[in-house]
Amino acid sequence: MEYRIEQLAKAAGVAVDTIRFYQGKGLLEPPRRDGRVTWYSDPHLERLRRIRSLQQRGFTLAVIRRFLEGELETSDEALVEAVTTPGAPETLGLDDLAARSGLAAPLLRQLEQAGLLLPVAGCAEPRYPAEDLAVLAAGLKLVEAGVPLGSLMELGARHATAVEQTARDAVDLFDRHVRERIQAEELPPDAAERQLLRTFHELLEASGTLVRHHFQRALLRAARERIERRS
Image (cartoon, rainbow, N blue to C red):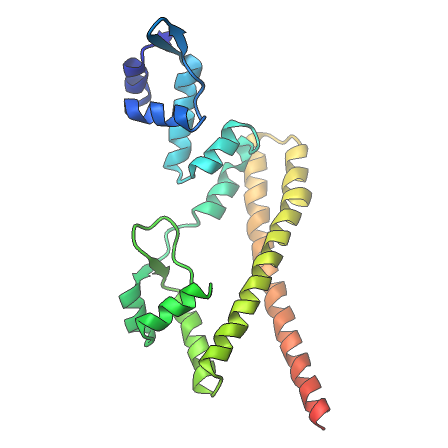
């Protein structure tokens, strides 16, 4: 069956401009041309419905492209959703965050510029997870104890840079040695999806435990070395 663009838009439940936008982004194959008339087919309709379904799950066009091109499997959907749209946390605007944390808004902006305070992606205006209040309170304790704010921010920025690289390496290891192995087992899509999601959450918790304990041990070791050196 073939469709004019208006008919395709109606069947897919999207606007004509949306179809043209997807074509411009390379997400939809060009239609068949008959003179000045363009004709779309059932595969175009299926592709549009697939794109719409993935968009409704909160996936970006970059992620949708990877699904459409087969770089991500259907069984990856739950895992991708857990990573890219991990629930809807309580968020605060900058002024609310300043009021509840007791820190001035200009200081919060400095923390954001240093990469130590990250707004939630996809918001029209900057909003921050309410759980950042606990992190800010912890930093404030160090300042109140006498640690210079500038030095603390510099240390935090160096730590954040190192953590970002470590996190990328950890994701690469998970992708190559866990995700690809599960996909290679050729389980039914639902079973593979459940196993991927369960394993991701288990390893995420395990990774947090490893990092926290390693840092605490390293901190205590550095403190002992400082004491022994002064002795």
